[in-house]
Length: 409
Image 1: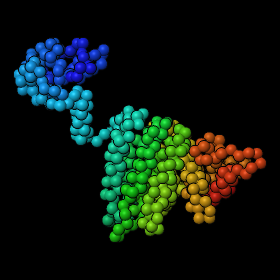
Image 2 (image 1 turned 120 degrees about the vertical axis):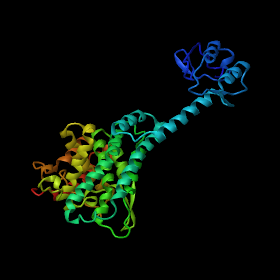
Image 3 (image 1 turned 90 degrees about the horizontal axis):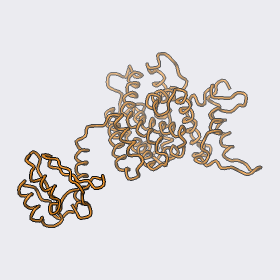
Image 4 (image 1 turned 30 degrees about the horizontal axis):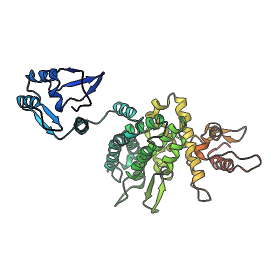
C-alpha cells in the first residue's frame, strides 16, 4: 500500500490469501511497502500455511528485503509499477466484468431491484442501457422468429393464432415494459429519459422488413411490443406527472415506413388500429364471445393491466391511467399534425358513448385534462383576458373529432 493509507490494526485472515487493513473503520488496500513497517501483517503472512489460493503482491517500486522474503516464501506473483489506487480499482473492474459475462439472465424481480439501485446516479447510464439492451434483444429475437407469414397450416384458425402471437409478444416484452415503467415512475429528475426514448426507438426498428412474400396483418403486429412500451410510458407519465417524458417518447423516435418511404414518428407508427388488425382482434377467443367496438383498444388495455398493475395500483387507477393515456395520444395527433391531413385518432373507450358529459357536451377525458393535465409540458400558456386561446380552440376542435365515436351523441 502507499504511504497515505496506514492501517492502525491489521486484521488477519489465515489461509485466505487476503489481508485487509482498517483505518478509522474504513476498509483500506494493503500492498507494496507495508511489509517494511507492519510487523503484524508480516507475521500473518509468514504464518500462512494454506496454498489453496495464490498470493499476488502489487508494488510501485522494487520490493524491500522483508517483502521480497515473504513473496519468495509463498511463491507470490509480483505486479510491478502500480500504486494501490491503480491496482485495486482495476482488479475490481475486471472481476465485475467477468461476473457480468458469467451471470445468468436476470429474473423479472431481480432486474427491477437492480434498476432501482442504478436509477439515482447519472453515471449509471451505461449499466442501465445494458440492462435494457438485454431485454430488447430478447424481444427482437421473438419478433424475428415469427417470420413474415401466418404459421403454415393454421390460416383457417387465424384469430387463435393471432391471439397466441399477441400473448407471445406481450410475454417477451414483460420485463422490458416493467423496467421502463418503473424507471419513468421513479426517475423524478428525468436523469435517464434519453434511455426510455432510445428503448422505443430500438423496438420500432425491431419490426421485420417486408421482403419476399409476407402477410401485412402478421408483419404489422411485430410493432406490438413497441406499442405496449409507448402506451406504458404514457400511462405512467399521466399518473406521476411526467407528461413531458411521454411527449418525447411519442415524437423523437422514428421508423421508416417501407411503403410510403418516409420516416414516421412513433406516435404515428404505433397507432392501435395500424398495428393491430381489427377483425382478427375482434374474433380472438380470449373475449369469450364479447364483441368489442374497439378491440385494439381493449387488447392493449387488458395486456397493460397485466403488466402494470403493481406500478399503478387498484383497477380504478389502471382504468383512469388507460383513458388518460389514450386521450393524450389523440391530443398529440391534434397538436403535432395541423391541417386537413391530420391523422384520425383511434377509437376507444376514452371517446365512446360513456366518455361524454351529456349535460355539458364535453368529453370527460378532455375535462380531466383541463383539470389535471400538465399544461406546461403541452405548451398551454395563459392568455390575457380578451385574447384568443389557441390551445383551447384546438381542444374544442378535437372534441368535435372524437364525437364520431359517440354513437348515442
